[in-house]
Amino acid sequence: LVAHSDGRIDTSEREHLAGEIDANRSVSEAERSRLHANLTWMAAVPPDMGMLRSRLKTATESARSALGQLAVAAASADGMIDPDEVRMIEKLYTTMGLERERVYADLHALTAAAEPITVRRADLAPGEFTIPSPPDEVRGGTVTLDAARVSAVMADTVRVSQVLGDIFADGETDDEEILDDTEPDSDKRFGGLDAPHRAVAAVLITRHQWTEEEVAGLADEHQLMVDGALETINEWAFENLGDALIEQYDGYEVNGALAQELMH
Image (cartoon, rainbow, N blue to C red; front, side, top):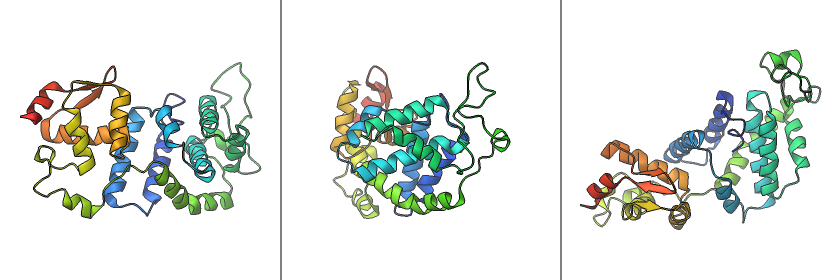
């Protein structure tokens, strides 16, 4: 959400988010690959604030605070905080029940005490005031960070990742469960998908059109995130059937030809 707010996702922002995934040593390689795929999907299709709000209903204050800090870190990864990014972070903090004033405290906590963070570069908007004007090294693309703060953030990465994992747990199966999916009673039409994704796909092909609420409910029933689940199913469909199985159009629309092929 924050990375999308200025209309683009900078390479450094994407790398920062990918780094958070790679730094989490508590997930398996299969889960890590799935998270990277989900990041690619969300980079192309902005996530829904409504989905985030529903996921945060039962989150603790420490979990919400960790998510806020991660959002700030992602936004500042390119060395500049765009006003649109600030507004989105403020909206995110408000949604999570955190004070908006904490946004600026968290922003400045990532920069050196002697160097203010760039809210907008002076040469980007002629005629408008800047808050504040960046130093020369920032204009050149380099941001000086407090070494102790950077070390603390790096040491805290695993904790943040685990907290976020609790919030966005999508019920992924472990290796033993995946092996169990090869039993004779499994749905052979969707070979290669794990049980939750196979179950979702089997229901989706029974209708041509689905509302966003229906698909969200179906994914939630199987403890999956909507975007990640649909991306996984579509990747499988491309590899095995040559086209996407479901696309977002006035809700969600199922590829009728593929559905017929799978049902017969």
